[in-house]
Length: 460
Image (cartoon, rainbow, N blue to C red; front, side, top):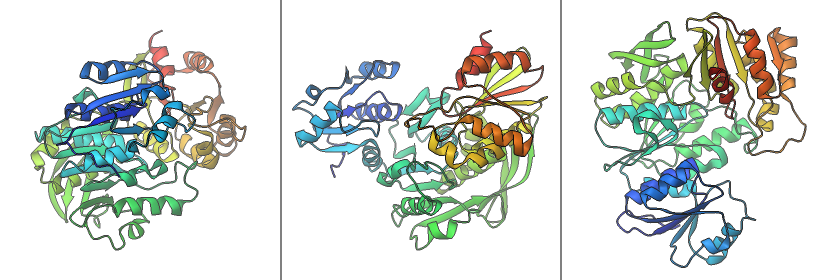
């Protein structure tokens, strides 16, 4: 495979340069004095920014975009083989790689690279690490799957040996990464349009862990049933985190304030180290913070910087994000789209000061909804009222195999939950206007565009 060397800049062309992760990698290469070009289907704020930074961006994808002066071509999973520009790239004989492969190549240029994996919590934990590393003033390069205020977007290009990124298991893309330290937050059934069994998912994370070099470090949730399978014969250093004393890094004496934000005593190897105060809510964020602490400590980041970084972190975009007040109703938005995430978010919401919880949920993909139908209902029943909208198709076509009404039926029949299925956002907004009461908590939830429901209500 072609090797990216920061000491030998070349011309890299991106097919789909306007994507949030692709644009971030393009920005890193621009900062390292590479010649960058790319194409995208439409103009956006991202493509405009890249042009200002020195990239050549072409709107529209065609064979003519593959020119002789290009040394390497990178493409996203969203590009299909019938794309004329991609076909021309294959025919050109030039080196070509996926976005994940390029990310792995970029990582190899950093001696202290961190990859954050797990079914849930990647963006939040990567954000926590970003705050900690910035507090430590180690000038990290950061590539994150969400927008983070402290870096003004999803990318930060530093000049040090530190690199932090998310590592997504979908299509096993994280197997192309080359980290020095890896985090595995949790392993759960998801991306079931790609993985077929839980055993297959566990083996995928095992393969990811075994990508680490012998002098590498694995930070892993020590309370998972699949832990022995993942770490079996792993030659690198292993540190565990969790809520039990059997873990190397664990939290004790956890308390919550009126906003559901936790504070706890941090223990390492059975000894109390310090007091940690979080400004994000829920026990799931206690676990995320423990992973960030373990990783930072393993890279010799001081405890003072760890505390300061966590103290400045108030959450990533679309992670229990406060949106505003609508007629004395608090509006929150959250990215949760898997039953485990929904349960964690609603459990955290119950710790806050509120009257009743309204959850407006937009299921994401038909395969996930069908496979986890009962689990979605069980998680959603933690809300007092549930409003379901039409399933967000994302990368899939609607074959009629499942509907949001199926979740509603289980909620009504098995949990006697107050639930209504309203396919359109307009119907949902009207219903909420009539039924939400003073001091209620309204959470728009899902990985699609459900956030607009709350935003529209706040405009009224």
